[in-house]
Image (cartoon, rainbow, N blue to C red; front, side, top):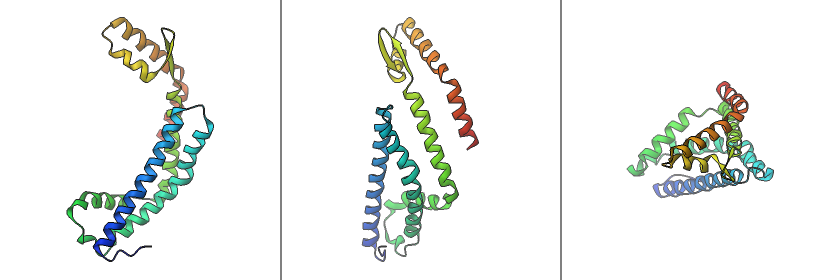
Length: 176
């Protein structure tokens, strides 16, 4: 509700907008990291899903309103050229924003989370150790061809176990 009638007021508003955007992005990031760090913890999964389904949709609408307020500000041409790229991006954001797309973005984010959950559960056994696919991938850089071949084949066989689930998810994403 602040008035943006001076250059100083606009620059303060932009700094505050940037700060709140950073806080929101960080919260989203931490929820994602926590959920993927402990894929068997339903509380963390629900916290992430709550953000995606109940917070993010409102933030998209609010961001559009704030972007329009910024671009409609009478003193916008008084701020320096350091804002040129930022303002160009805000013009594009306003141009392409459609409220009807908000539920679609929510569905897409939820589907990405499903993919992440499936991927994070993929493990292989090697020399008595359980390895995530990322950990196993390091063995693909070893100079020993036999080790690389063994790991590559184990990773491929493990991925094949999830073929049906991943295909269903991809079909869902294509329809979206």
